[in-house]
Length: 465
Ligand code: B12
Ligand code: SF4
Image: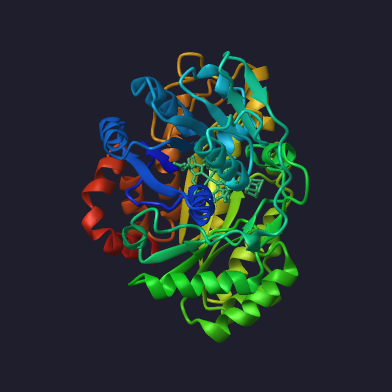
């Protein structure tokens, strides 16, 4: 079977290409079972014509989309714009996992996959190849010939991740991704996350399947993947270990940080929760050539962060974590959010103040977006906080708001977003504050694309990394 994956990355901010692990994992598994796969990456503005050309030229049997909620509106448009479809169409990824009913909204769609897609896709491809009906494939909802929908039971989480092939990086121009992403190769060693942040879909994804959710591949399996990737691709200078939960499994973390430096010398970039950072963890990270630690802080007001966002940590522990990382010589990066339901300009000022106190080398400020089914998404619906006129508006992800809150109007949220970096860095470094001010201004997005050829120099200058 020929399976075409579509990765929509439409209207996202910034010029870097990214690798989609979900597609990579499913593609690796399909290839192992003798199928052919190909990827169509939609990057930049919405343009369906190149996809139309690929469909006509390659004639895939199955077209699989990997979909997150902010991209769903584009996927719907694609399904409409390219109908009638000759291929079997299926959605997988976070959005159909959380909202499987999206099958009903799209007449051009044949099926959706709930949760992990490796085995369901292999079974789907086998059924279609053998001329059997895929109506009973577990984890799939399938539109039947009579128009009704088969809602099949969902498989358990796969416990042994080592049995899957490595994510298929040959499906894309992975060399170009490394180049575009500052000479960085990205890895994901585990799956699942044990936390319950109320703005994140994680808790719903966890509930969709039975079994152990937070899992890691064995350390040796991960090291072998690093070896293969660093041997095969040129010019890699950093390894980004993208797992949110890199340090959650202490035994795994210790084994990794023991073994990695014996075999590799490339610097690693990691994600951590502030409460996981202590002397012992930093010593281990240092030994593993860690260069940067990224931490989700998400808000500067302790009470708001705990009660509304369910991120239970003190500001003091956050400050200590950033200081400790600095002492060990790691660059730091913080994630923050503005425009949350119930937030006020005064509460946001706490985020500015805490970030100014932390002085991370770099940061990401996201504007809150209500994802369906999340605790905060449901709250926004219940309290009618979503502006009906803006619900389906297409904008550059997380740089605008769909909420209408009298205490924190849209104009103020956008202003807070644009001025955040300047406010955070102005007292410490105008050289850093001013480029950031431009980056987050209205002209930021066109400028990022204009400066694309010299972005490494710009980043080094502004962020020191
Ligand atoms: C790492 C990560 C990223 C990374 C890498 C993304 C990737 N998948 O490779 C980066 C930083 C690039 C990223 C970007 C974004 N992310 Co993200 N990300 C995650 C995170 C933490 C883990 C995802 C992951 O890679 N898991 C491992 C892989 C193997 O699993 P998977 O992707 O789920 O894929 C499996 C199944 O879903 C399924 N599957 C996936 N695709 C397909 C396709 C088909 C056809 C089939 C059948 C099955 C299938 O099979 C896969 C293998 O089992 C999740 C949180 C979470 N707990 O899941 C958020 C999450 C998926 N991200 C989310 C969002 C919103 C985004 C962004 C929009 C953020 C932004 N504004 O920029 C972008 C969107 C990028 C895009 N264009 O799609 C949301 C999605 C919410 C929702 N309800 O849709 C999540 C759930 C976090 C949250 N805040 O709720 N993300
Ligand atoms: S730590 Fe990250 S992935 Fe886990 S629940 Fe919170 S936001 Fe979601």
